[in-house]
Image (cartoon, rainbow, N blue to C red; front, side, top):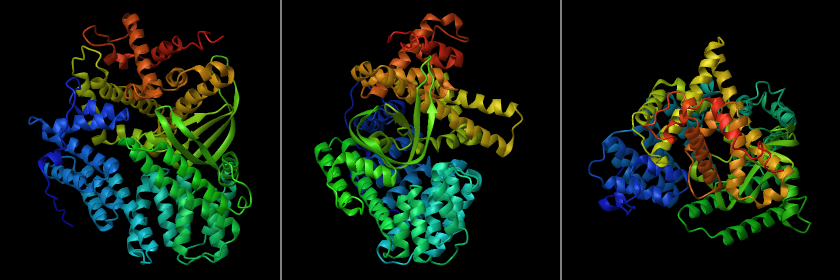
Length: 627
């Protein structure tokens, strides 16, 4: 399939716009503003960079790719996005990403054949194993979406294409078992194949369970019912009573989307009331997700109507209330709605602001695990409920905006909630960053560029990306070396690395960070109410760095998330200021320190012990200043 240029003016293609004189025109600066949710500023810098006749072709391709993505995701400008990507393709760098984005745009535009062609082309240009996998997953997502589109329009699905995609996903999972995206896609594809064994395999992989007969307790009933239906199911349509059992098992393990899609695939509607309630809820979630994502898009371009969205959300809740058998005859109120949907569907979340966005957002996921836990910091040792939620209908504006970063959880007065999906991809990305030779080289080149610059001043926006890469890379290399020195090799080494990274992440962001919010709320409730958002986040980040097994990973994220527009960004800025001041006062203790470079650019020289010492002694909780 050949792509046609929509010939438009050069100005429209390059999207020139004014930018202030004091803003550095670089990818680093554009990325820094993007990481602060400052779409307009990021876009102005990228557009101004294209106006520079001296821009090199590698950078030009990257700028065009970023602008094209923004054209589509935030502005729904199909023609402009396609034109930019085809111009980048003609220059000839980073083709695998260019064609992967083309595939996504065509898929979301329902041009499915074009999407499949673009995904295949993306794979042919792949150099890294991670790039190849990403291209294949884009292809698989298109096949699934194409199949649902056909089912919705009474068009037979392509069983050969489905079978090919199933084989492709199984091949990916052979080396990426437990990876969430291929696991979920295989589950959906397997339902469209009437392939019960693969449904079980995909379900186990997604929840990282080795034995279907021994899941964690919260999912035990779902696992048992799923196994009973699927173990011997292959090739034939299930009878209605087994369809019902499967839909209930999928719903109780929170795969509501696939439960509803399976109903569409089967074409039956004579279900019992329990199943009908699950289907009503699944359809409600799809409506909520689509409208909420559009609301977030409007936020990004400054055209949101918060009052209208809140009113719409309340009306959709009332509609669901009337459609459910156990609430239809009751009077609606919001608090009862939240109680009932948690009781019957595992719904868990909130509306309001988040640490990195002060506006109105929706966070809505579903409970997949719950247990008692204890957090201990500086002698405070509260018991609490630890709840994992997953299958997020929405995880707030920032998660939608960035896509590769997500809200990891929050704390209430008696509970810590972890967003499970925020922790699933990180371990695999970390492994690839140091074990894929080309991926490693890319990172090392970034670090080398950072290390070779003079960095005489404290320009955090030009230095933050390279510094963050250095901190994270050093931490991951040390973890790998530690496990290797213990004699681990091959898959044993990989599994140990993935497990260690996941534990690092959960200990830092949930038990240290969210645990600190819990402690502050429980023991200092009046002060907590009076504290600003950035002060609350600063306290939590202090604990995250002190009590994390590997603080350099968290510090890397904070260094790369400095800004002025949210509590998280302001707290990150204060964390960096704390580190810089500690370095100024302890230069003689820092191995390799140079007076010719800024303190900020040398944060990576701090040992893990020095990081913990620095932030422990800056913490008012440790210093007893709250009493």
